[in-house]
Length: 283
Picture 1 (cartoon, rainbow, N blue to C red):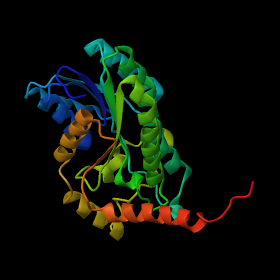
Picture 2 (spheres, one colour):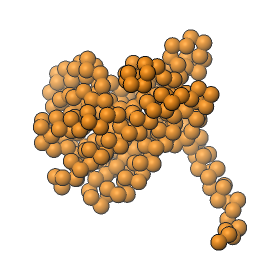
Picture 3 (cartoon, one colour):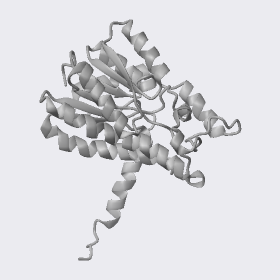
Picture 4 (cartoon, rainbow, N blue to C red):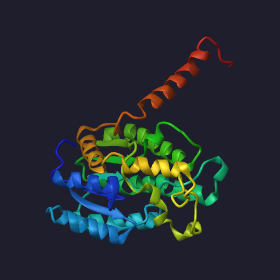
């Protein structure tokens, strides 16, 4: 989508972090944006600030893990703007601890938001993008954690799922004039450690998070928080997402920090093929 001006985008998790930064970058390019978030106050504040720049933005509150609310958000988008060209599935949570701290609620929460929220976005907005025949683009936020697994936490599993979904969808939608990208950011200055602030009551009021931000003795959490505070500015990521849409990038990465780990992973996979290349499989 080389010419974004006049197009319409639907962005989830739009009230803060990468979602807000991408909304800003798209609005600066002349895109009309329906901003979707689960937090009403944060959404209202973000919209008010953007409108001071003459951005054409509107907002809708929805829980991306509930299909009915996503359908209502789509209806609101069509009622306001008539069409949708860009879908940015960005909402996500840093949920679920590793093997020794697994819980059913942690798995349910993380997979519902990080995976099914993306699935519902595509299922509902994909046909809307197809319907006008003008082409479009879908971006879904995974993580560098979707390219390398450093833990058994549901968060990593969910992000691998988003990568796989995006890779397959790109092949299927290319003939229909719709591009697909997967965003795999590194350490970005966001509120991911505070994901629990939006924990839905149906998960029992408490789940394990990737790092427990309320545990003063959790050195991993303290270290990760310090890294987040010194992390990449979300506005830079928003600009990358806009460029990725314009140039139809398959993968959108943000920096080189984890490149050696990811390269080593693929080298290990290829080494597995080397181990069996001279063997004849049994038939």
